[in-house]
Image (tube, rainbow, N blue to C red; front, side, top):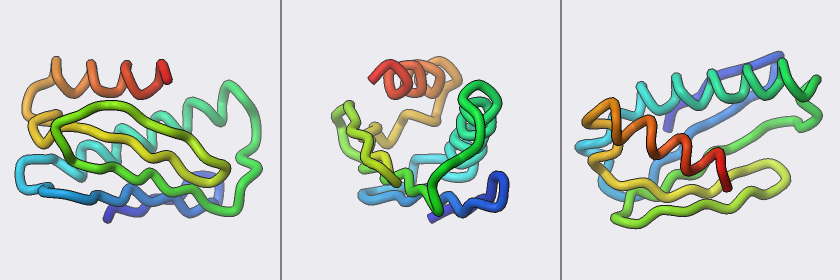
Amino acid sequence: MREFTVDGKKHALVLEGDPSLFDADKAAAGVKKIVETARTVMGPLLYPHYYFLNMIVEAGGGLEHKNSFLGMAGRYTTRTHRAYMCSWRAAIAL
């Protein structure tokens, strides 16, 4: 689990599965940038906290809830820049 704060709101990236080949620090930094950009575009963060739940499996997809997001990514997702950027584009497009 990696935690960060944006505008005083606690956020956490929680990993489930085999994270041995997944760069959690890189992913958390990317998620933080997404939250900061969303705040700039959409305005204040109206939730008390937010959890990004990432299942490390050989599948893709995601589902957003009120205070959380459940996503799926492969364990090799952060190994190359191309794979990493493609995974975020896919997640944002959901």
